[in-house]
Length: 49
Image 1: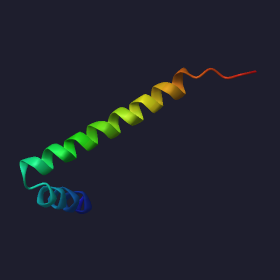
Image 2 (image 1 turned 90 degrees about the horizontal axis):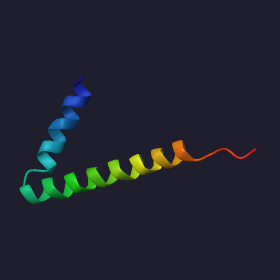
Image 3 (image 1 turned 30 degrees about the vertical axis):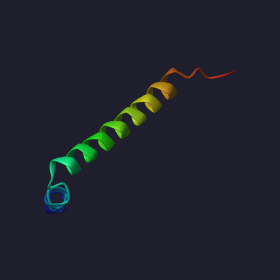
């Protein structure tokens, strides 16, 4: 649990300005959409006999 607190503290220090927060948020949203699209693709792919 202390490791998670350290991670949150570090992220708070790194994204100390609004511009950095928006850039980081955009990257996180992009990654979420990438992995969501990948999951949908894998789930919808049909197996070939």
